[in-house]
Image (cartoon, rainbow, N blue to C red):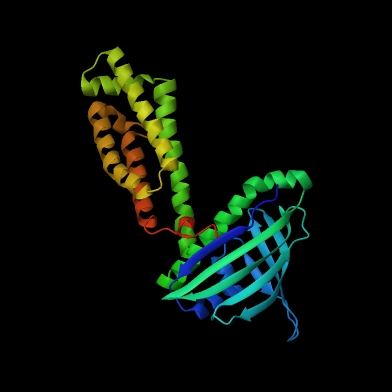
Length: 298
């Protein structure tokens, strides 16, 4: 079954010429497009198509490829288009060769910027299976990049700043997911650590069996909250909850077991550290770029 081409469309409320320059000048293009680390034009004669080379760094690996902008056109309705042929000879790349186009359509108050492209894969049947995962990632990266471009041109925040905030927030999401799931699962649900039971029994004046039930319920709630961190989109809501919860947990731990304040890696320093990370999350999470702002189908 043939895969569908990748299609991404977004309205950008700036004149068409600004969108054109930001996407056609290689030094500007590489700043906002997550698919490229660098783009370099190859010198050409006046009537020749514009050829270029590109690089995408992925950790210790670098994929280098070639491209050819096979023409641009100013259409009768005031729109512009630019077609593209691209590929790479490196076997490490999931993409072997592809074609696509950019289109810039004037609209009231700005420009409708869209792209569609498709490609052939490496590695035969295995490559086609890998593409079941890789193609959605490419579509997501394209849409996220378009939103970064939109915010750059409309609001002036540089792409590198947007990506730093975006990836910082995603690292924090993974961290808090791991934290809550681990804290609920290991010391409470699996190990039922004696100190967990002792703090609950002392703080709430419960019997041993009652304390076990409460610790189990708390552990289950923490695991569920960790899962919520992974899937709930409005992370600021969760961060605000943590800004309230961590001071309360610190006070509760100190009241239930004041001697733990003398321990290494004690609840006070641990929860204060988490409170600081939560504050950092609140600072970086406002108005993050998102692929959801793009139209993904014609």
